[in-house]
Image (cartoon, rainbow, N blue to C red; front, side, top):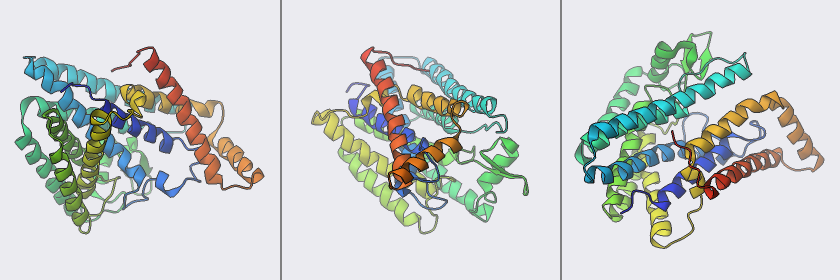
Length: 354
């Protein structure tokens, strides 16, 4: 099987497009419920996007490394290349956050972030892919899921700022977290360091799925996907789904659903030759995401978020429509703009890699 599957590119691209859609509304105070994250406990469609992407990181790692290992490539050289790429992804995430405070000096430098978590998970899953096998992957998944649950229980509460991941991130990053409560001296970050451990479990499930897919087996994807989702659903009654904390139940729930999505995309795109919708975003995933984030960071230099929201609300009033419609229209226009960018890059066979 080829190391490059159109279905994987398509699924990755759909997740990138979804990220742009939910991250860039015209007015954050007027958003349809499915396009917003759960306030704390719970899981909306938006909460699935980042876990799906991390799952695909694991899938892609298996598809990229296994053919090279079969051809006799040196594991050490492959690992060095992977670690350099991971460092570049982390550096890009930090650079975007640095640009944010240069544009808006009142903001603070956030150290964790989406790209930072992707970089850390890619580095770790690369080690597993190169030096261990499926049994070790599942042992690590179980250890991470159960161990993290034990840590959360030891913390005594899951409430914001008071839970153990938030206390740990405050100790490590201080004011460098996404939110910081000066009154308590505690911070909170949905992409914090401690909660990266269960997100690695999500990524490792993707590694197994990629390994299984490369072996030409698809039925295990259905069985294991349903099993993980069912286990996680039952677990959620004791440990709620929570993206901010990336609870163990959430990690396995999203991994199970992502595995079923992978099976569906593989069946439709690779086996039945359906058009790989989303592929253009998928082959330039980091470029599209980082470019869109940079654009949104620079936009306040031209139009402040408050002025933008006021204009959209004025149009909604003038047309007697729900302001969520104009907010969504802005997000769709933003998405279409970036589709034109990745379409042009793909037509010219330009693929930006880190």
